Length: 483
Image (cartoon, rainbow, N blue to C red; front, side, top):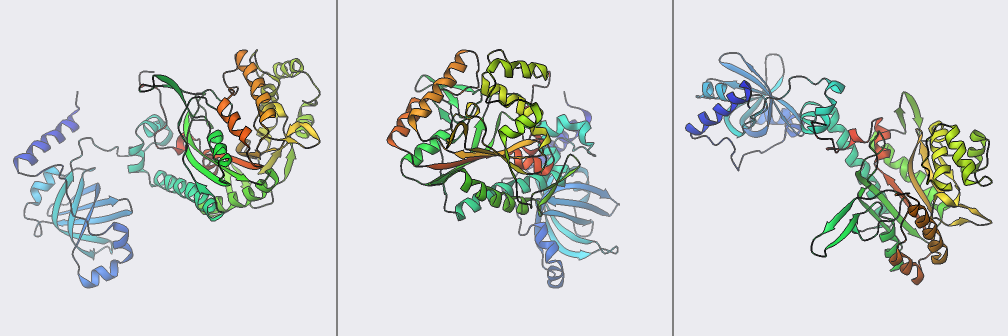
């Protein structure tokens, strides 16, 4: 059922059609965008050049024989002035035009008595008749449901939101540019996989009708990219969508963008130097400086990032060495901390759970967290001389992980054993444990060179903006309205 305002606009559609005016024409005229006119205003004014502008009407101020209006396109806002002596059927348009309509206007620029840059309109073309009135004011968090469900309204009314997504585009394009400068080749790998791998996460399942088989939406880009290295490429990356069937919170989405790259003949030490350099470039280009605000705290990205040993931190804050205690002792520690671990949780899952809850929230300034226990990273090489640890690092800041890299495991025998341990955890009920991927193991048996690999999601961008990841995507998944 339509309300009165919407019903009134539907009636205007009929009036337009009766007058022979198409309310939704396929073609329109636009010679300049608004930013061009603002930047070159004096030149346009001097030459008295007539131009066509097009955009959305954001306000209409009727003053009898004069109408003032604001026209907005992607580049900015400009004032329009409609005069009765210029437009013979101005009374018709006064009845028809509403805030929210798209129009194209023809005329010349001038300054009003109040010295406002304006366009004196000679011709009007209706481009799109808006049937729903725009909200007149934005109330922020009170309208968060509408903000996320109907993001386009937020974009129409809030320049800050537009700027957020412009920055996000800069964020990803800078990563892409820097990797290409460093000689990396951008590639694409399948979204549908027979076996999901490369991360510990529960996957989504879909059915392939032509093959009559179930497939998984990928949870990582890792295993396919490593197969490409087996094939002879040495520096590859992909920026693609990832799908993980896990909980919703400030840091997690079910579908999101992730970057992964792999660098043959290098290890995690080389990678840390490269990552610190590239992060600083990306942050500077995205934000404009190397200092950001997160939860009212200043985050300084410009200093050299320290390396913090995982085991030493664990011992410092929990008074136990995770390498020297049993699975049951770790389980009891988690219970003592009120963490509610699953009964089937293995040693690695328990170590990770305790660390995330007791230590990581305290790591606010950027650092590298290095050398965790082998149980929590089945795809990384062991530390030489200490096989209980792996050559992995996480970029940690603002109390969360903002990227992860390691010296990739290329020993097919060790990799098979670790997959088998993961499968035992799956059999006990751990849906996030990794599956044994026979095809990946076959690829490793042909030989993959020593390799450093790294992955980063859009969580980093959200932290830089001091927002949740849901706020930083155009259309996050939402529950049905009646739920």
